[in-house]
Amino acid sequence: MPKKSVLDFAEMKKKGEKITYLTAYDFPMASFCEKAGIDMILVGDSAAMVVHGLPGTVPMTMDQMIQHSQTVRRGAPNTFIIGDMPFLSYQVSREDAIANAGRFFKEASVDAIKLEGGRRVIKQIEGIVEGGMSVMGHIGLTPQSSGQLGGFKAQGRTADTAMEVIKDALAIEKAGAFALLVEAIPPEVGKIISEMLSIPVLGIGAGMYTDGQVLIIGDMLGYFEAFTPKFVKKYANLAEVITKAFGEYIEDVRTSKFPEEKHCYRMIEGEIDKLEATLKNLPPQ
Ligand code: KIV
Image 1 (cartoon, rainbow, N blue to C red):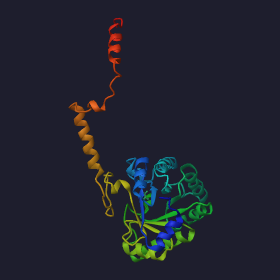
Image 2: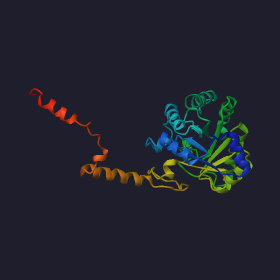
Image 3: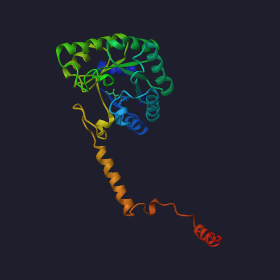
Image 4: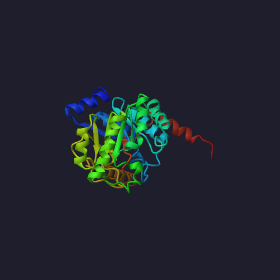
């Protein structure tokens, strides 16, 4: 399958075809995403929690995100990949934002970057787009500023706060983003935004009416165990599968059931006799 482009995603929205989107942080998961035919992959800063065992996304650095993105690109050479701008890689200035976005493209061959925030990051989005790079916005629950939001809480549940989310969505489209991610907002608000915007709107915890859905791979595969948000559907329980496999391995080693003959490299015929003769003639140690 040829790699999809921003034009394909715009076309999918027009035709009402849902866009599929998952996070990945490493080579094997990226290659499974590509094999399964996912439309786009986010190298999310959720790697902080899912891969690095941190309590939130704030500590992730540009260097870490670039390395994850390079690995994902190797695993999924024919999939549209989005690099997630980590905390403080774009908030300080438009110049920082352009330079750091550029690193994702130059060093990791991503197809787009994503950054969090609405009206307060418009000058950064405009700068990156003017630099010739594709941007996905991210509003609603924005994990990098979850402290300001009072935690990982759903947004836009009142008419006034919903209106703020809608204003952010409109501003992001106007700034030139090719797509928007909306997180943890009511389905009614997800529907209004998806209908008002001409760019594709991808949802996570934003209901069933958005133009596509994204899930975090550790949640949907059931191997991230620290917490599971309400919006997650688990498609597998890898934590159970993997822990069971490790348990069986431990038992096999302890009871000498592993390795078996089929796992061994035997010596070439006749060589063991030569070795034993050499050992016999060794001077006393
Ligand atoms: O970093 C991430 O995984 C995200 C999710 C909300 C999709 O931004």
